[in-house]
Length: 362
Image (cartoon, rainbow, N blue to C red; front, side):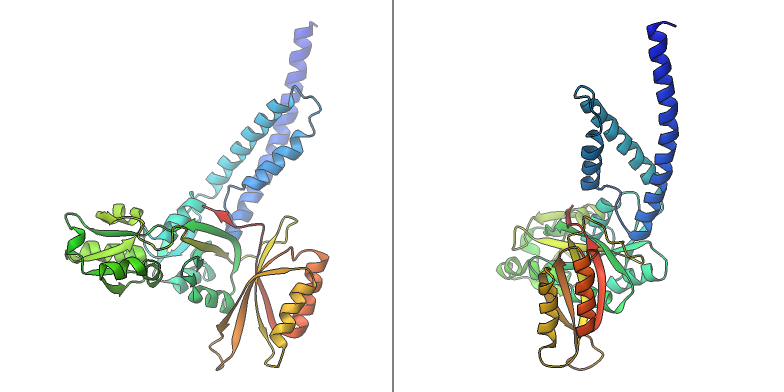
């Protein structure tokens, strides 16, 4: 047997073994795709991919071959994601609004293979997941300029869904009107209350009368169907394209860094993972002096930092509140479990609705 034939035999044997390992890997990928669908997680996980490439490439002893193995890994990951995209085809993601709404735009970026389904309001989108119509819901929880979305926080407190990812999306508001209308013709603007608040300075300067709509895309649709030349919508460029409107003026929101935080809600709680650095909890305290202070102290005593603490009325009793807390740290650790045990001892209720690594910009 020649040296060439021997080399080819080695390659054939290696390829045969890799084929078996490839099938094993792809079967595992199917399990990953199923988990992501059930938990409302996106296919792309840049941090995880980088970790795989770094860890596995270190197993290659040859400096000459290592760069080629990195390319091999990248190709394998891309193939794995192609299978995941195929398996997640048919996933349904609920959001509040119609096509062109900021939530719709965000949902399509996070879940490019899913069918994004618009609902009339936050509660309807949330309920669509609870009753099994959709796999997950993408809902806004906070805007950097206009604050919390209280209705969504209330749904999180009273409902049964969990947050399995938090995403940051820059919001750019535009003044949209029917074709042929000039800015001097506009007397009224219509949009979601959050959008109106974010553009308050501009609206006041222009002297427009404000009208509220259920969301920005609905506002654009209403303007398009109104037949009027004196009304404009505040919405996205995507909404302008969807409903045939023209952009009279762009980026009219007051804050240039206007960002909305969206959360993905699903029925299944994502297990604690070693890389988790953030958590969201909801709790109520006994109606006694110092009870809230004690709860906050427990969190700090165990080395966890609170990034946000907000109160909302429970609406069940007068002057009764629940607290929404976002913190830094891993609740799956020994210290995290000890903190939760101590917190449960001094609170009426403690509900963990989210544990995740970091917020992702889209």
